[in-house]
Image (cartoon, rainbow, N blue to C red; front, side, top):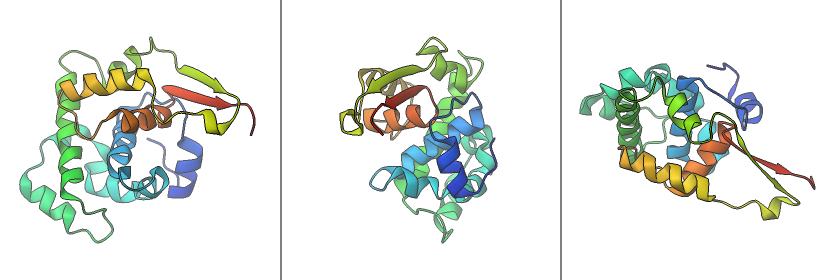
Length: 172
């Protein structure tokens, strides 16, 4: 996992290819919490997420009980939305279940793109969509496997943050 301050992490991690399951779980968690906020605002809570979700060890988070969720919701630094906290636990459990079929969460995600990032090139930033068909396919599969808060838009942002889908804008 990359250890940078929250501002460095957002600017230096965003869009970089990652194959680290803890980092991917963290990025997915940011995606869950950014709903109704912004990616940058949620990413600013990286340290809070790591503290509350066992250093992003999805196996430990998958074993959380209701009192663990209550403890997290009492943290004044946490984005205290019970549905989102429960979604993170549900997503951790979904990742654990994936391991029956895949060697890692990373293998599952990168399998959708054949191990090579999908790169889309746009002339201007205004052309960059907020969802792509690839993200919709992955979101549907994730939902089918028990993931929560993974609609096409959230999944697209998550995949972009992990470098699995990359948008290149020519006119900067």
